[in-house]
Image (tube, rainbow, N blue to C red; front, side):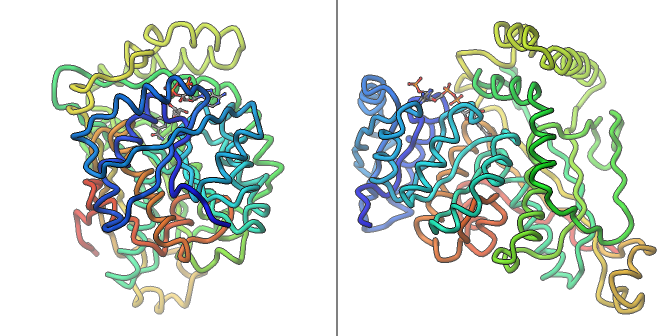
Amino acid sequence: MEKTYDLTIFGATGFTGKFIVAEVLKTAPKAFPGQQLRVAVAGRSRERLEQLVASLPSTENPSGIQPVILVADVKDEASMRAMCRASKTVIAAAGPFRFLGEAVVLACIHEKTHYVDITGEPEFFERMAFKYHEQAKEAQVSIVNVCGFDSIPADMGVLYTKQQLEKTHDALPSTIEMFFKLHVAGSAGVAAHYATYESAVHGFGSAGLLRQLRKAANRPSVPKIGPTLPVNPKPHWVHKVAAYTVPFFFADPSVIRLSQQLVLQDKDLATVQSPPVQFSAYICIPTFKVLAMMIFASTMFGTLARYEWGRNLLLKHPRLFTMGMFGHEGPSSKQLAETSFSETFFAKGYSRALRESVGGEEGLKKVEPDVAIVTSVSGPEPGYVATPKMVVQACYTLLKQKEKVPNGVLTPAVAFARTDLIERLQEQGIVFSTVQEASR
Ligand SMILES: NC(=O)c1ccc[n+]([C@@H]2O[C@H](COP(=O)([O-])OP(=O)(O)OC[C@H]3O[C@@H](n4cnc5c(N)ncnc54)[C@H](OP(=O)(O)O)[C@@H]3O)[C@@H](O)[C@H]2O)c1
C-alpha cells in the first residue's frame, strides 16, 4: 500500500512532541541524503498544529521540510485510522499513554503502520504486548514501545553489555547491575513536565492492575545463569559508584524483564538476543540530605497515590509534592543544557575455560563468575533532549532497516538487536562505551 508520509509525529503539539518535531527537521537531511523525508505532524487541534508549524525556526530546519498537518483525536477512530493509513511510521508522543496510547497502537496495526513511542508506563506497554503481539505479527508491523529515555539506554545498554561479554571476552553473561546518575552542572536544578508526573501518579495508583495483567500474561520466568544476584532493597552507600542508592523505581527493570521474556516465549524472536541475564538497577543519590528528602517525598507520594482522593491531591499540587521538580511550565532551556545522565553497568560472566571445567550451565550455579566488565551509556538531559534523539533514531531505523526488525509488539532490545541503532545513537551523542575491560 502506498503511503503518503514517511513519518508522522502524533502528539506533536505537546511539550515533548515539539522537541521531537525539531529533532526530525534537524537530522533528516543527514539521515536521508538525497531524499526529502515526507513528514506530517498530527494532533487533535488544527489551530495548535498550525501554530507549531509556523513557529518552527528555519535555522533549525536545514531540510526545508514543511510538515503537513493531520488532525487526529484518540476519541475519533476514523481520524486515527486515516492518519495511520497515510503514514509509513508513527512516533507516538501523546501521553499519559494509559489514556491516549492504545488507540494509536490499534490504528497502526489495522493500517499496517510501524510505530515507536516514548512511554515509560509498564501497565501500558505490558498490556499492549499482551493484547496485541500476535495481531501485530499477523499484520506484519513492528510496534516498539519505550523508545525514549525509558528505556533505550537501559535496554540497549544491557544488550550492548552482553555483546561485549560474549564477543570480546567469549564469556557467558550472568549478572548485570545498573546504576543511574543524573548530573546537574549549574545552579538552575532539574525539572520535568507535568504529563510525566501525571503518568507516574496513575502508574503508582494502578499497581494492582499491573499485578493482574502479569498474572494473566503468565510469562515465563527468566532462567538464572550462576548464583542468584542479590538485590539490596534498602537505601545504602555503594563505594564503587560513590553514592547512596535506592532500587530503580521507573520502567527499566520491567522493560529488561519483558525483553528477555518475549524472546523466551516467542520462538520467532529467539534469534535476536543472547542468553538471559540477571538484572538489577539502582538510582544514585549524591548526598545523605538528598537521600532523606527523597525518601520522605517518595513515601508520601506512594501513600497518597493508592487512593483516588490522594491522586487528585497529588495532581493538583505537583510542585509541592516533588520539591518543585514537576510543573506545567516544564524545564527551562538553561536547566536542559545543564543536565545530563549516565548509566553504568557492572557485568559478570563465565569464561569458556571455567564453563568447560564445571561441565556446563548446571555446574555454574555453584561457582562465581570469573569475568567482570564495566560499561556505560551516557547522554544529555534525559527527558527532552536525549528522548527526542532516541525515538527519532529508532524511527529512522524502522524506515531504513525494517527487514532486520521483527514484527510484533516489542521492546527496543528485541526490535533493534540486529540493526545499527547503537551506532546511530553514538552519532547523536548517546555514548555506549566499555569503561573497564575484563578483570578476572
Ligand atoms: N520516556 C521518556 O523519557 C519521556 C520523556 C518525555 C515525555 N514522556 C512521556 O510523553 C508523554 C507526553 O509528555 P508531554 O510532557 O509532552 O505531555 P503534554 O505536553 O501534555 O502533551 C500531551 C500531548 O497529547 C495530546 N493529546 C491530549 N489528548 C489528546 C487526544 N484526545 N487526542 C490526540 N492528542 C491528544 C496533546 O494535544 P493538545 O496539544 O491538543 O492538548 C499533546 O500534544 C507523557 O506520557 C510523558 O510521560 C516520556
